[in-house]
Length: 266
Ligand code: HEC
Ligand code: HEC
Image (cartoon, rainbow, N blue to C red; front, side, top):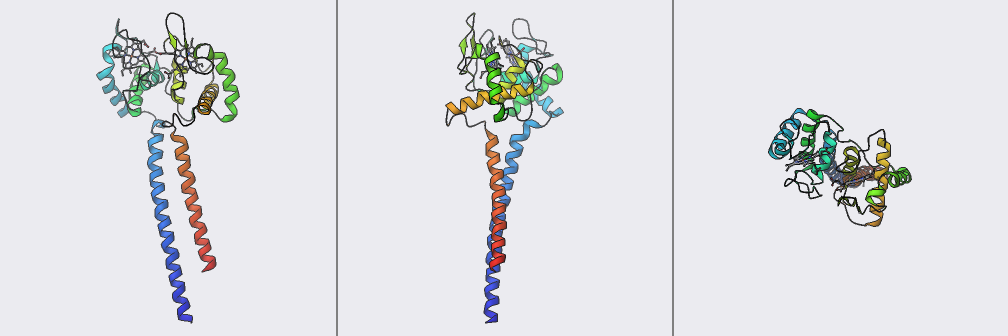
């Protein structure tokens, strides 16, 4: 009787340890996957290194130098000076596919980007390092939900006259167009405000504070999301990693619970 019970106990203990090991394995692999995710999405938050600047120089020499010059000074009749334009302008221009300009005199319109996010950051780091100016903003660029109403007021005051109340864009004078904002990411909206492409004014941090810029982004992106279910999913890595954190924490809690049940019934 006693021997049988202790054999049963051992079996139970083994079973318990077995399921704990399976859960531990699952937990470890999710944690690993999350770590990979976190470094991939957080890479833009690191300050640019000498290696990034050197890589940016290489890219610049390959595809920008003919129009913008070896010292960012611009080339007469080809491209403007980039001294003082800053990394934000480079991010905006290259991530929206406007640069590199295909041919002289062509209107720089939105196209698929020619470079990866990493390469764009390297180009921006190079121009920022040698030319100075407003840099690429870091961290969360979309304000909290509580800022949406303020963002709406600011948008109507500063942006709607050109881009329209529903961001679909509108013709401007002299055959120019204020484009639709429907494809723009948080970072593109922010860097557009910082750099004022073409006939768009620059909105310095004195005119529209960083907090107000984030409120405008919250307003634009929230309104877009509410009217466009299912679209524009690719750049939203944030909620994905949040879900993974919740999952990892959840599995941990579940494992603790199972061990606790095991201890109670065993
Ligand atoms: C064929 C010539 C040409 C090439 C190549 C080119 N650009 Fe430009 N770039 C221009 C012209 C012209 C403008 C100004 C007109 C405009 O914005 O449409 C400009 C504007 C810019 C601006 C905005 C400047 C400002 O004051 O806001 C940035 C930033 C920029 N280019 C970066 C780049 C980068 C980075 C590359 C390489 C990846 C590149 N350009 C390649 C011609 C060129
Ligand atoms: C005077 C008119 C004008 C005003 C005001 C204006 N913009 Fe623009 N905006 C433009 C023009 C013109 C472009 C296109 C520039 C180009 O193609 O190089 C543009 C481009 C943009 C883009 C890039 C869209 C894309 O996906 O290609 C964004 C984002 C943007 N503006 C946001 C804003 C925000 C936010 C405000 C208000 C804080 C604002 N703009 C105010 C004229 C304006």
